[in-house]
Length: 171
Image (cartoon, rainbow, N blue to C red; front, side):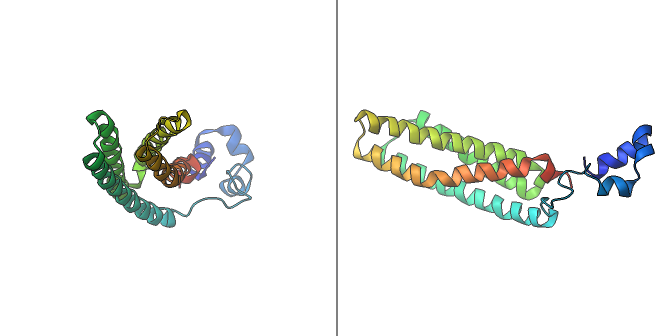
């Protein structure tokens, strides 16, 4: 329960109003984490989201550049290239929207979730080829590059999931 909910209950709930004042309710264990300060400072969160959104756009542009170079150099079908373009478009759009309005963090979370799933699936497809013994040197090298870069998408997705939690948004 947050301050707004307590004020609502004090205004409209007779039984709650009998047992609590605003101060007693704020000091009680009705507030989440009332005995443990675990809330993210709103000013720091906005600053972090701005920097994280810039980071997201930068990573999307790096992804686009590398994927385009890979497609030009080694050839890739439109069906293989299109999901990467969708991921880049989602990341850039979500990063831009989150810079403009921090309430767009859910869109950023969805974009990173899509990028993580795409990243994992691309790695798993190559890993299966390596296990089968049918992988070429290019496929194996690409698998290693994906494995070493995957923590970026995993960590970014987890960060955005945490920032989407209600306790971090109700300020």
